[in-house]
Image (cartoon, rainbow, N blue to C red; front, side):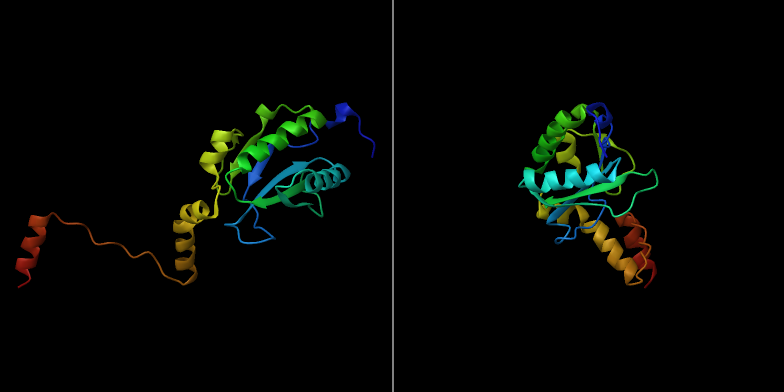
Length: 176
């Protein structure tokens, strides 16, 4: 496939998905996954090759084996979950501008479980995405606990109402 510079304008999608997929390389708390769409398979493969060779922070990159519903292909990136990741991604987006002419300010992203996209900025990324294993565990602790309880068949038991201390004393006295 021979593409001209003008054909590259919307080759790479403007929407990034963070941690939507599980890591192949390790624990999700240690490895972050980034995914986005590319219109054609050959450019997606070329991009994967470029990512793996051109960015030392990229541990692995891959392209989906088949196309998604709109005919595009998903590119996956795996990287260590580190505070420097937001700057690395912003650098990548800036580098892609020379290939695609896509304005870096037009990119959006969403973190797993979110329904709305946010503008891809350093501040937004750092506020929404856990950038260390410890932060990932802290943010996901409640979610994981709920999943474990559901898997074990434990239902959330209704909590008794909290009584006013004077009323509680009265109820305790009346039980005697």
